[in-house]
Length: 605
Image 1 (cartoon, rainbow, N blue to C red):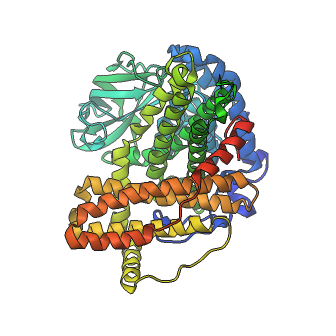
Image 2 (image 1 turned 60 degrees about the horizontal axis):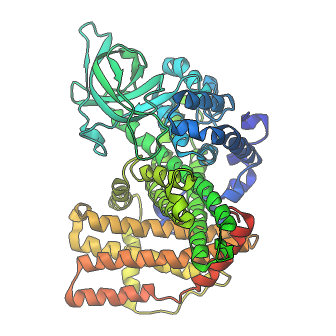
């Protein structure tokens, strides 16, 4: 069973070696240099976190894995039982305050649980829908009475939570919901009318957080218990993936909700919805890393055992390339996830201790990293999608049949690009929030763009040569930042205040911004390990070379959209100066990575 850190020793953020973790302004990675000691990595997990990791892995492999067939057959009683067992272990209560029978631990620990429990996509969704977006609205916005009434049951897994925001007509446009709430004549109840779609856990939930507009105007959230008159749970959806998770529509017909079940303030429901999504995004990224590791382990072991032309297919160069691609993707994603969440934890350590301040400060400090949370969500979901596609390919025909887990992993991964705001919406958040913060003076983006332009006008200068194994990758990173700032400046010059309406350019800018953060995270992590993992260095070099091509492509698309003729030729000349580099021998690196991974039989450093 998971124990509270005070029962075992100091918590993560109180450990002396964590005091240098950088928790600067969100988005500052694009315009500032960061040193290796300033980021949190998976190698920094505390003893307490390692213990929780072991507990979660044991639960996943011994309790969840044997039940995957039943879960996929949508035996919801099995899912309900496993959630209760997870509650008994304390895995459901990490984000719940101690006074309500929770453990109230750090966000890294919460994300680590989300990663390690992702052995089965369907169960991972059920777990996260409960412990994340299902429970956190109550933790952050509930009254003392609401928390006392519901949180202990949710923390124990006695009750399961669900979160009902989406509607058939709104989807990503959450503010356009049509569900309506009106106050009863006696002032004791709200009457809710409307429909909700795609509600995870709906078929097993005891408590729903439902969003509606009071009198069609004030966006609000309500706590509705299962069995409430006027609340009907519709039939289970038959989904392409995550088939074993419960997903149902909700129908509200004069649903009678006591006024004391209003969650937060009337008219402030959008704050609940959007702040919770930031947590959902970084947890989804962590779960994607976990899902990738499990799928990859199965694929590597198959490649070792499958014999073709008298030798294991793991010895073939193109199979080794798939293994290297996937391993480097996991490494880069893991570096990204724990850097971002570690920064959030370091920032939260500054929050005040009073109950009233804790809720406000928690939201404020997490929202500061909204850009990074969206990057985690988009990048990790797309990395996982590429990886499971590779694993199907590696299995050949066997990967296309249900007898092999590669087929299920492939189907299950697809939802991640839709969950927690589509990847298209999140790309607009990444570049949009970056520019918005610059305009508000919260991020010195414009001066950074001007410095790049001044450097361009001054002409080529001698390189700031670094030493060490990753010197070339640092130069790539420095030029990636300059390329991104140069493209942002060119796009801003062309479109001005209307840039936000140019969604294709904003999406390409987001790809460049993401590329910078992930590349920097991979480099700094390898350097922070100080030579303890030659494999981390190889994967960093491999990933850097291949990822830089993505930035180049995005930059060319942007420049082609903002200029033509002589102006375009001038800009392309400048761009090529930043893009100039000597390629790595990724074939040799890939073989070295694949050999080490194949020997281990799983992702490892």
